[in-house]
Amino acid sequence: MTHASPPNYTYSDVAKMIDHSLLNPTLTAADLEAGCRLARAYDVASVCIMPFALKRCAELLAGSTVKASTTIGFPHGGHTTAIKRAETLQALEDGGQELDMVVNISQVLSGHWDYVRADIRAVTEATHAAGQKVKVIFENCYLNDEQKIRLCEICGDLGVDWVKTSTGYGTGGATMEDLALMRKHSPANVQVKAAGGVRDLDSLLKVRELGVTRCGASRTQEMLDEANRRLGRPAVQAAQVASVAGY
Image (cartoon, rainbow, N blue to C red; front, side):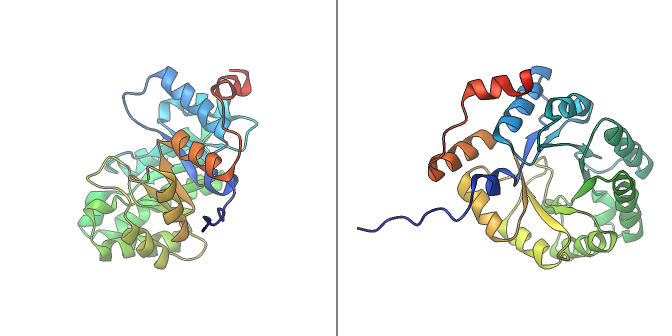
């Protein structure tokens, strides 16, 4: 009789890969607060929330190891650079610790690389000046490999913290091929984030094997409940979520 190999990861290994996504425009204020509580109870890496709710998110996560994060130029990247920078400064003031910015997709497709570089630099420099981190979203579903590689090179030159596949609102999300490409063409100090399409624990583990360190997810609870089950750990109870931080 054969036995399955024990998991080669800890709960923290997988939980700290997850950026819990609260970006659906139909989420209510109550939904957003409940999502922050859930993310804190499951001790994920961060909550990525709609910008208007970031300040409250930061309050709910205070004292935990879960980072408060939001988006810049989301979801289409077409904001002017000045507006993206203003969004960045507002997010930092509201307690943002990690910011997910969208490149100007139109300018990437047009081959206007000086503009693209300056756009990314403006957000990166403002974020790093505040001691926080930035993720740059490519929206790979609209790009060819040459454009993806060029973006990796630019982001490497600028010292961004992560390159990210997708917003989750394009025509496609993360693919294994794109993740491998981005890891190959990014320097070691630039991490890779998957977004869109990672919906279960096995998918999370597969992208982890490629060197992905973060994953945007809305099915956080299902994935981490499964991780606890496989690891033989106690399940996170609804009462634990409800009682987080006394809220």
